[in-house]
Amino acid sequence: MSYKITIKRRAIKSLGNLPDKDYQSVRDAIRKLAENPRPNGCLKLRDRDGYRIRIGVYRVIYQINDKEEKITVLDIGHRRDIYR
Image 1 (cartoon, helix red, strand yellow):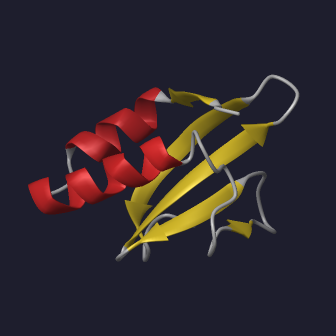
Image 2 (image 1 turned 180 degrees about the vertical axis):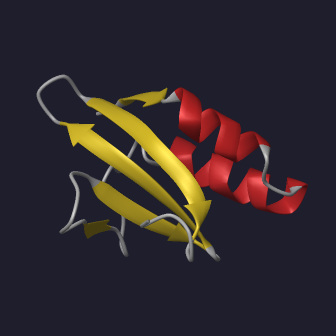
């Protein structure tokens, strides 16, 4: 079962601003979500819809639609800024 991944414009912009090493790590983590949308360490968010995964000091916020087998990446950012 493989989910389709869609990335919002805001998340694409944030991803493009990451340093090269972090960019590759975050990109790979997002790609892995297609096979396992709820990996170990992912958390369901309380204050907003969606889930988050940690990649070093960065966080990826995303939503899962199990009926359509679709993942939408909403935002990517540093841990100190992403929840504001």
